[in-house]
Figure 1 (spheres, rainbow, N blue to C red):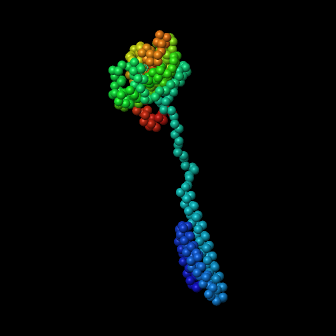
Figure 2 (cartoon, rainbow, N blue to C red; figure 1 turned 180 degrees about the vertical axis):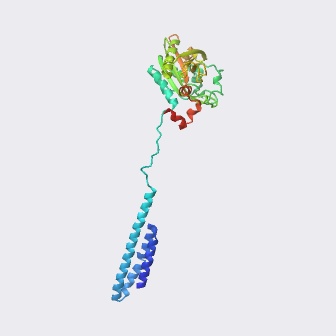
Figure 3 (tube, rainbow, N blue to C red; figure 1 turned 120 degrees about the vertical axis):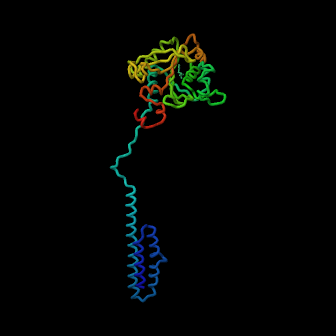
Length: 342
Ligand code: PHE
């Protein structure tokens, strides 16, 4: 019996020593100290022994049982500590390590130009209006006095949205002129920024999606002088007070007379350089006195009211202002490009 006890104790100790996790330790506990284990069996069989032997062996059995118990407990602590240390090692945070730099966003150059131009017109009492990107062909062309044969109406130029060709992605923000004329009564002054679409193959200066800012005023006694004064003021605010403007005759179906406005080159001051291609002048917008046929869409008394309108390409202004050479930069979200404008 004594040998058996020693043998059990030895085996148990070895197994405890070899255990590497809490589950196998628990199995060992059940195996040796459980109801069906050898220790219980030994203690039970003590009853059959003579009192002297029983006393001595009982003592030894208890010592062995306590020994197994305390070894199990000690090993449990060792394993737990090891598990804890391993976890600490894995989850280690080096508080001295430099953090990840969080990039703070900035305004997109297109947004900056739009906001700058809108601020100039808001200061002159203009209201900011927005129109939908998809509009009727009437608002995009017919209402604007564009003949059905006008090349810009071609399906190779405008993105139509249905077979009847009466809906399209607006090719310019002038749609908002018609919307305003139909919705409200003069006098009004509004500017309208937004995206426009044309079937253009992307290259350094063309994009099928681009931005324009439209402007329109209708009131009693509005003349070409108002147009020139207002747009000259805008050019000076946008490009610097020394900027000069000139108006060249042009043609748009929706204005009469029509013009394109040039600004003196803000890079060379008008002497001629690569930006203005040696001419000293840079074309920045189209404008004109609103055609009576357009005013008629809003049932406006053309004897009493006149107005002017203009439309400018935002990308073109941003490219000139910030020296950007490729229009595609605006849409690619390349941080190396965008970071310059923060
Ligand atoms: N809609 C014209 C264009 O896209 C610009 C313009 C607007 C010209 C208003 C005159 C008056 O080129």
